[in-house]
Image (cartoon, rainbow, N blue to C red; front, side, top):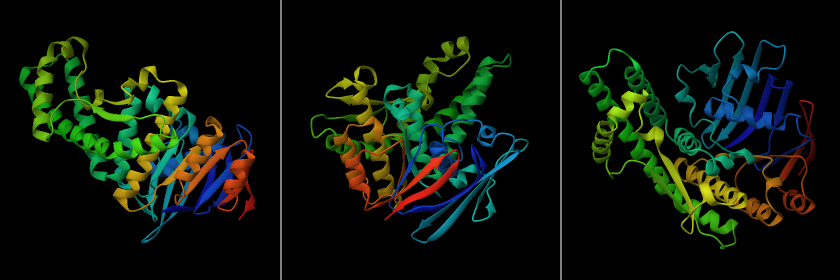
Length: 367
């Protein structure tokens, strides 16, 4: 799969812009604040239905404009598909695929498959557990609409249980009903996540060894309730809810479940989340993203689009070369302020280059 065209109208600092992309490597250069990241943001919006930078859709609309529109066209093995998202300051966003409105955001998942990486994505290793859960959930939602709806059901039940814990209408029978539902859906979430990490880990280990020139080893494991089957996890979940009941009642929220789980990221038994240097954390984060890219290709038989936002500047020349070697065969969209001469030589025969200035994109080099 690759993106052939991006069309923007009143999106961020873009008034009216159409961009034709190469199926190989696309490089967008320009000074900071010119709109490079906004291009990648428009793609993630069409990929997962939300911005990679803000939860507020209205911030995506150009200043002093009432509406905005983003359109992405992708070429797939079985033909092309078009995703259109319309934004308004007074209405909810409207999503269309091939000109047909979507009533549920879950139907968007997997249409435009992407893997996004920026310097801020270091939080997937050094950040809070919620950042690593988000990494798993975004990856899984793009692979499976079923998981998207499963996670939505779990979060809705969790919200209802938390409301009940804070209310004056709490009875043991009412809480038992929500506990049973929460454990049932939560066990499925945990089982799916565990399976994903089991499949992801070998890719992460291999990429990490390659990026570190075999100097470092990494291990990735899911941290959550025990159990190998859904039934076993459900039993553990119910026992944990019973154990935490008094604490949940006292504090008014649920302390146990997949909404509290984590991924351990270790290097030779050292916890990189806590003790890793920034360089080690960066390599581990990049390895996780590459693992997501390769696993998604294996499971969906369509190659996702790789979005690299100012990532090359964060890597030394050796790791830049290694990264570029690893992403051959994937459509890649790179933003940066400039390219090192050695990197430009590596890319020049397999890329096109654009310059971005004040919300305008111009093609400056095509091979």
